[in-house]
Image (cartoon, rainbow, N blue to C red; front, side, top):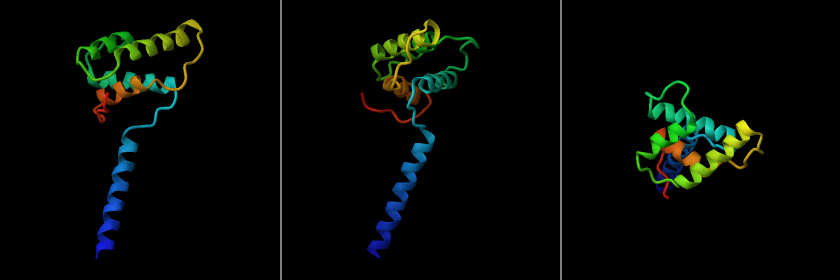
Amino acid sequence: MVFLDIAIYVSLAFGIVRAVRMIQPQVRDTVTAFGFLEKALRKKFPDLPAGFTWREGVERARLLNLKVSWEEIQGALAQYERFRYGGGSKPEPAPAEVVKLARILSGGVRLGN
């Protein structure tokens, strides 16, 4: 009977972990990270204008006083803009704080600072 209980709890834990991974996609590159951020900003702030910039969205998110490193986000944003608009090299790997902000904004798990 104890083994059956253990098997049930292990399968339940496995199912929960799998569901969380499906809800929170693994973001491995910068382009995907900023795409994820854009979707999260649109979800959190539906009143943002159609052609909003990431800087406008990030400034709006900053007003929420979330536990993220805003300096790292600003640095990652500057690097990504250089890549996207100025011919700079593609920053790799995906900026962790940008992904963290996107997950918080989209209602994902709040990760510790």
